[in-house]
Every structure is written in C-alpha cells, then in structure tokens.
Image 1 (cartoon, rainbow, N blue to C red):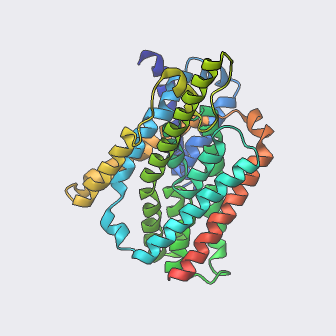
Image 2: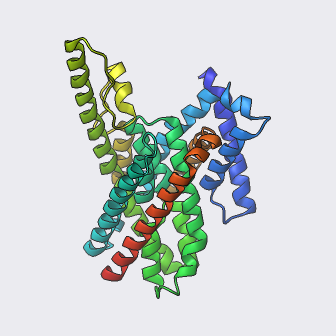
Image 3: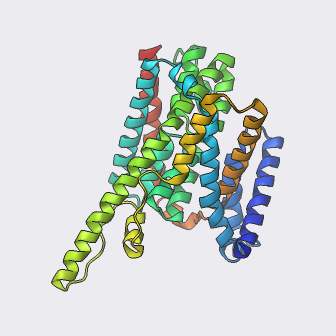
Length: 355
C-alpha cells in the first residue's frame, strides 16, 4: 500500500479539482473533468515525471480497483421494477440498440485496424454506459492500460459533445418530451451526460432518459460475462496451439484475441465467467429492488460511486499518451463518428417505432 500512496494521493487531488471544475462550470460533469485533468497531469512538464514515476503504481491501482468498486455501487442506481415498468417494446428497443451499436462499432474498429482491445472497448463504451462499461470489460479482458485510456478519452469526448448537439436536434427531428428523453437515454454514453442532455427537454424527458439509460446499464453484466467466456475460449485455443508447437519443437506466438489471453497463458490463470465485481453489481441491483435501503443511504452510495469513478478515470486519463493517440487519431476519430451515427440513428428509429 505504501508504494501506491503517492498515486492515490494524486488521484484524490485530481478528484477534488474535478469537483471544483464542476462547481464553477456545472455543465462539465465531474467524470469528464477527471479524465481531462488526468490527461493534463500526464503531460504537464512539472507533473509528468511524477505521473510516470513514483505515482504510477497508485494511479494504475485507482484505474482498476477503484473502478471495480465504483461499478459495484453503480448497481444501487438500478431497480428491476423501474426498468420493467418501461414496457417490453422499450426493452426490445434498447436490446436492439445495444446489439447494433456493439456489433457495428466492433466490426468498424477492426476494419480500421485499431490496435489491441480498442475496438472492443469503444464498442462497449458506446453501447452500454461509457467509461464505466469500458472499465468493467477491460477488467474481464485484461486489456492494456493504454487501450483503456484511449477508449475512455474518445467515449468521454463524444459523450460530452452530445450534451451540446442533441438538444439542438429535438425540434428539427420532431421529438416530444417523452420521445426526446428516450432517444437521449438510448444513445448517450455516461449516466451524467444523459442527465445533462435530457434535462434540457424538461422533467418528463429527464425521467424517461434516466430509466432507459439505466436499462442499458443492466446489460453490462451479461456483456462482461460474454467477454469473459470469449477470453477463456481464446485462452484454451492458445494453450492447445502452444502445446502443438512444443510437440513439434518449433517456436510460435499465442493466438490473438482479447488482450488478457496471452498474459493468462503465461500465468496459467483462467478468467472467471462472472467476475466478482460484476456479481457485486448484480447483488446491488437486487438490494435496491428490495427497497430496504433508505434514501439517505442511497444518496451517500451515489456520492461515493461518483467519487470512486472520478478517481479511477483520473488514473486512466493519466495513462493517455497523446503522441500515441495522434498516430491513430484519424482512425479512432472515424470510429467514434461512425459509432455515434449508428447509436443515434438506430435509437431514433427505435423510439419512433415504440412510442
């Protein structure tokens, strides 16, 4: 723990600065400010040696373990009764939006030749719940920190732009309060960004947006489980391939696939089908659904969840290496634009059909 202390202290200072930015400019969500401040810290001449040196272990820990804790607490925002109250037509619409966005983004990212797990992580962030979903899937896939940071930066940027762009389209697209709220909830990435965007359409729009958005969050657990299954399958194939290579006396590389597969081959570990933090996430949903927790406890848990995710995103932001992002900047920007068109277009069509 002592070696993590400098990085955790820096992350805490980053969270405090993000809270200050949000207080001064309420339109900027705390989580967005945390990512940007983390990126800035990694490139400021005075802080760069600290971020890359003594603070790196603690910042990496924040990006992983604090992210997991934040995702567990995210489950307390969800109630199965609220989600099912939307009706099966809306449930089907959300499933279609998530499936189309995930598959389309993953396909396009691979076609563009983006490195590592970036296609998988960007697809996850766009289709489910932004940086929180990226953090969850990266834990299951064992993704490289650089891939996670680049994906978080892209999804955060596009989600922030949605706050300004989508309200301008409400009238031209002929969307009423309910329709606009559901469109926002189905197409914007982060929960905070959904709230910031939907509140411009009125109280009814905000309620519908949050309910639809939280239903997308429910799909985080099966998605993470699916990624874990894929990692296990690739790991098994890699081991079989390595056994065959050793049997012939040759030398070869482990099969590709999710970023954690090769590391797992080396360590002999097998990723669990349902990671512990995802089980905790589901348990919190059940706990919230029972109604046993008072509103004050839920409020405190919500504040803690936001602070934990802010610290995690500061840590991830500090891992962004801008020269590396610039080298793939055109391709990853094209992926972000393409995915945005898919999620906005499919969700708009879904809202028109179901309302």
